[in-house]
Amino acid sequence: MNRAFAVARMQLLNKWIYLWIPAIILVSSTLIALAIIAVIPDSGAPNLAFSGQAVMWYFLGMGVQALTLTFPFSQAMSVSRRSFYFGTLGLFAVMAFGLGVLYWLLGIVEEATNGWGIQAHIFALPWIAEAAWYTQILLYFALTTLLFMAGFWFATVYKRWRSTGLTIAFIGLALILLGAVAAATWTESWAAVGAWFVQLTPLALTGWLLLAGVVLAAGSYGTLRRATP
Image (cartoon, rainbow, N blue to C red; front, side, top):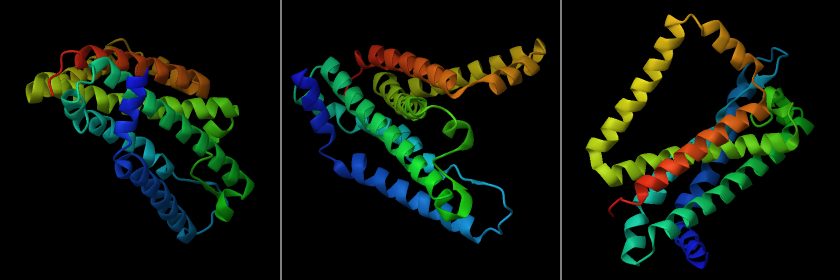
């Protein structure tokens, strides 16, 4: 456990990547969205903006950087792959949870100020804001963690099999998606698929996102065990 904490502290040595850039993305994307909404003629309807989730997508790149920038250094310092894995994932799980709490709090402020005075919905998106507070936090946490794990897994694939393995992984994912689309088309199941998405609740979506994150976490650990710096 102490070694895992040491890995987390090692990751945080580069505070610019893990703290300041996310803060800059959050502030700048919010201000840009508010500026755009402010100049749009008022139609009386809520103004939706998804720019607030930009920080979550940055976690995809953070997942890549968390491995490629520090994994070779950790191996030179004789840190086990297990300690590196759990220390890194523990750190980003805490960061994802903190981001979820921040988004929930910003959503409360947004609703209290009538969308920052211009009916803007950046953090309190209608479908999500209608759920319980803990569901909102868990949903943001699950999506952020999933994006991080996707980037981390792709980085482990590259470290294990280099460009060839990464290319094959992308092709494999594309074939899986193509197969799912083909199966839904051949079985004429698009109506059922659409109905499933319509009936999906924020809590149910959170569960699916967490499940996908667990699958990626297991896959990345198995790949990391044989990855070379």
